[in-house]
Length: 291
Ligand SMILES: C[S@@+](CC[C@H](N)C(=O)[O-])C[C@H]1O[C@@H](n2cnc3c(N)ncnc32)[C@H](O)[C@@H]1O
Image (cartoon, rainbow, N blue to C red; front, side, top):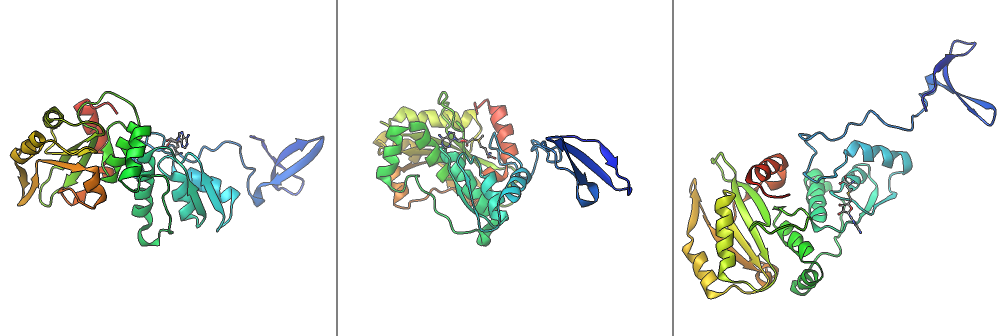
């Protein structure tokens, strides 16, 4: 509604609304009549600091307004399609309880990291349900939905899934991580590849090829099946990447079993993948990866 501003007999400005032949006056000294559209909250621009790289992300200010208008502190906010967690972020900020639901492991991982980064030790306690907790449930996910399995496992390492939930041609790189090594100016890039079924030597060769193509210094092969002898030999022969006194195996293989038994990858400590959503997008554009 966009009513003209009128002035009454006492000189007070007001807006008028007529309903059922009855006049309602909204005095401006008591606040303006709310519009049914909002033009004061800008869409997120591509360089916005709060942008996480999630394609449909909304500005937090928008969700804050909706939550403030419709709930009180301590209430429960539910978002059944919560994407990268803008609603949860706004609800946490406004001291509401919250429940978020999303079908995508990428979304779940992103919102977990977003909340942890924003609220650190002040973050309310929460639990995540429905993501694999052991080898059996991970295999179950793979059988049901190999793409969701791939996204879930990639995101466990907090790297960017190159499918980003899309079912596309496998270009040898399923995920991409970016890391900083102290005193080295350029970020180090790690290519991740996930295999659910049978593995063979040519899979590792394909990863090596993709690392060259996409200019990645490091490669990680994640597999449900155990690697074959020739694969292990290729890994052993692939040497190390060294910079500023730090050394990392150029190629690493991690099985699902090893992952759940707590074995970790040797990667640079400073993972900047999600601090660097813009650079990732640029890298992906330049390297021709289909996001
Ligand atoms: C438009 S996005 C929400 C974006 C969110 N407003 C934000 O700011 O990030 C819709 C989300 O719904 C999720 N989704 C799609 N189908 C779903 C389903 N059946 N159950 C739960 N989530 C689903 C998608 O994964 C996606 O993250």
